[in-house]
Image (cartoon, rainbow, N blue to C red; front, side, top):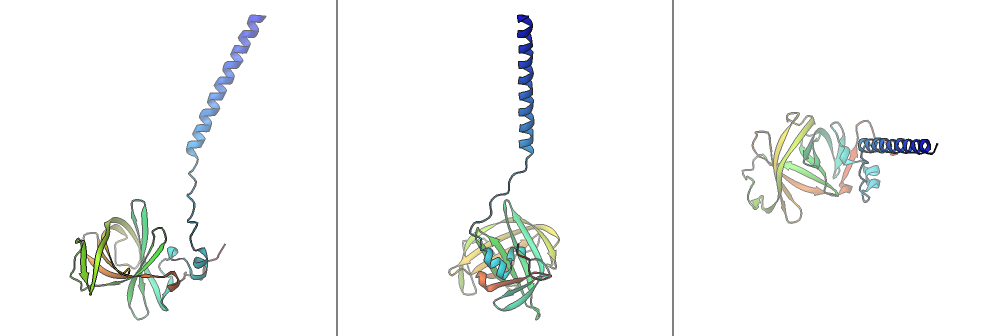
Amino acid sequence: MDGSVAWLVTVVGCLVGVAGVVVAVVALGRARRRPKQAGPGDPFRDTDADALRGDPRKLKPGDIVEIRQVSYAVRGSVHLVEGAWSWAEHLLDTVDGAKRWLSVEEDPDLELVLWEAEPGATVTPGAPTLDFAGRRYAWEESGQARYSATGSTGLDPSGTVRYHDYRAQGGARLAFEAYGEAGWEVARGERLHRSEVMVYPQGGPEQVS
């Protein structure tokens, strides 16, 4: 009897051990398949301004944006990605046909820049400093990004863009962009204060939850 009991205890112990291993393997598999939690949002994001003035991060073709008391229609949008970084540029148009670009970027704070094209510029990028229109600009950054375009932008639906960004004292910007195999396009930019921009989404104001 003692031998039989000992054998039974050994068998039960082995079964318990095997069951424990199986449970551990199943739990590990479930843990690996569990979706990653989204990272925390910016704790300093000005959600009150987004609620009162609209969220520039959500601009899309057809929306209306008011900048310094001038109303523009969003004709098209370009969304750009470079590595883990992304930003957007929106083509704006007034009733008089004046066109501007609005760039929207978080770096990490929200940065809004109003751009005006300089089609007659002959300056080219690459030098550490550039003199243009009475200002001296210093090189800030350059690179190449992938883009996707929606609405009326004059661009292919997707592709790549090379860029060089310069900045002058006081925050004035000078940008060079070359989409695909096209040549350099030059634009001057001016940073906007958040209070200077009001967004009217297509279909009316967004509902605040």
